[in-house]
Structure formats: C-alpha cells, structure tokens
Length: 140
Image (cartoon, rainbow, N blue to C red):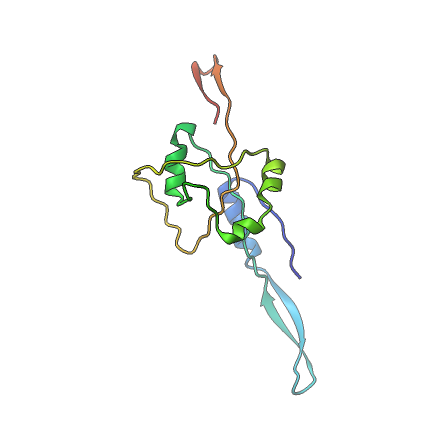
C-alpha cells in the first residue's frame, strides 16, 4: 500500500521524523510457491520522498538562486514537471509562476547530483517599516 503525504516543519525536526519513520519494520506474510507454506518475514517501510520545499531569501537574489539551483532561465521544465499540476499547487500555496531570469555568475554551489528539482512557484514578501526593529525591509 502507498500512502502519500506532505511534510512541513523545522528542518532538524523533519530530519528526525524521516530517520525514525524509515527505521520501522513490519511483519510481511508471503506464500512460498514451491512449498505452499506461508512465511512471515520483516520488511522495512520504504519512505520515498516527493517533497515540496520553500526556500526563503532576499528578492534581489532571485536570479542567483535560480542559477544556483540549476533552473532553466527560459522556464523550460522536465517532463515529470508537466505531470505535476503546477497551477493547482501554486493556487493552493498562494504562489505566482516562476519568472524567466538571466543566469548570474555566483559563488554559491549546492551539490545536487541525483536530486531532481521541479520549480513550482514564487511568493513575494511585503516590504514595510518596522519601528520596533528600526528598519524598513523585506519581511522574509
């Protein structure tokens, strides 16, 4: 059986959840076709991530972050991305479509071999004055 769900939370708490759920084993009944005898073995639950991530950064670094993540500057997406209902996801999450960008030279590097990244959408932060803090800023 496959159960699909999403997670969101503090990274270290999410990591602890992942560590614990992937360490669970269950009794599994199967029949030996040669002997006709039922066997019970233990099988590990298979946690297969389909994750949505929210990465928060100052808006003026949009092009650098998209470059760092290896997104296509013209908005071309991987065929799997087309299977995701991105419009519905954006609507549910209150996001706008990813905008085209000009790649930037950056010293930022994120190792991502073996990790597929599917851009979904962006959300803009308010800019406001906070007299308590004494700054006018983007409210990250």
